[in-house]
Amino acid sequence: MTLSRKLAVLGTTTILGLGFATETMALEWNVSVWGKRRAFTEHIEKLAELVSEKTNGEFTLNIAYGEALSKSRENLDGISIGAFEMAQICAGYHEDKNPTLTVIELPFLGVPDLPTQIELENTIYQHPAVAKDLMRWDARLLMSSPMPQYNFVGKGDAPTKVADFEGMRVRALGGIGQAMTTIGAVPTTVTASETFQAIDSGTVRAASFAPHAHLSFRTIDAGNWWTNNLNPGTVSCPVVVSSTAYDALPDNFREALDSSVAGAMEHYLAEYDKVYQKWYPTLEEMKIEQIEFPKEELQAFKEKAGKPIWDAWVQKMNAQGLPGQELLDLALSKLD
Image (cartoon, helix red, strand yellow):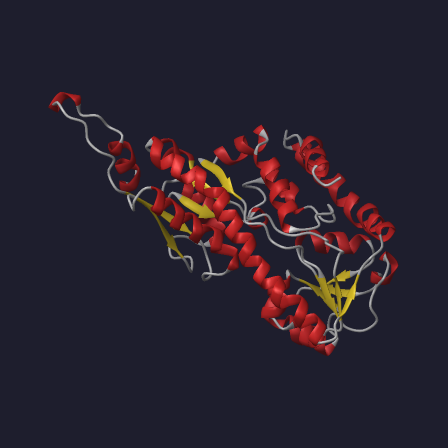
C-alpha cells in the first residue's frame, strides 16, 4: 500500500483506545499524465483546484506531466500496482487492456459535438461490463477527456460524397484508417510532425486530426479544404482512479472529488471553445473551403465506412465473452 493510501485509511481511523478521535489527515494523490499542460488536461487541473478548495487544502492532486510517473501506455498498469492514484489513459493505446471502452472509438458513429461526446462516454462508463473490464486493473472511471472529431484537411479537389475518397491517399490511423479503407481510400503512415510536408508534397491528399492538432501541425497551411461535419471518429481517453484508493478516502474527501467532476468538465469545454474560437476564424482567413456533407451522404459514410467496422468489432467482443452488440446499441442510442 502506498503512503497516500495509508494516510487515507489513517485519516478515517478513530483511536478509541486513547480516548480521542483523530481529525482527517492531509492527503496527496499522484496523477500520471503525459505531454505538457494543454486543453486536453485542463479538466484535471480544474479538478485539482476544486478538490483543494473544498477540503481547505487537505486533499491535493499532484499532477505529473511528461511521463514522470509512467509511460502513457502503462498508466493502467501503474494504477493496478498502486504506483499512483489517478491517471489519464487512452483506450486505443492498449485495446486488450480495456476492450469495452473501444466502442467509443468506432468510426462514423455520428457524434456531432463535445457535449454529445461527454454524454456518450458517461453512458458507456456506467455499463456493468465496462466497470468490470476496468476493475481488472483496480481502475474506476472518473471522467472523460472528450476529444473533438478527427476531421480531414486536404489539398486539391474537395470531396463531396463517399465515392470521392476512392483512391485518395490519407493520413488516418486506427479505426478511422480502417473505415477509410472500406470506401477505397488508401491510409498512409505519416507521423504527425511530417503531415504538413506530406500534404504539401502530395504524398497524401488529406489528413485527419482534431482542430487543435491541425493548427499545431500546420496542415491548413498546406490544404485548401476541411470536412466540417464528416466526423469520422475520435479517441477515448478517460481519467481513472485507483478503486482501492478511492474506497479508502474519507467521506468528505470522496464527496469533494465526486462533486468536482461537473465543474471540471465545464471548464474543459470552455477551454476547447477557445480552440474553436481560433479555428474557424483561421479557416476563414486562409480561405479554406468548409465542406458540409448532406444528411444522405453522412448516412452513406456510416453504412459503407462505419458499419463493417462495427460488425467486426461486435464479433471480436463476442468472441471474448463481452456484450459487444449491447454496448454498440447503447452507444448508438445516444446518437439518434
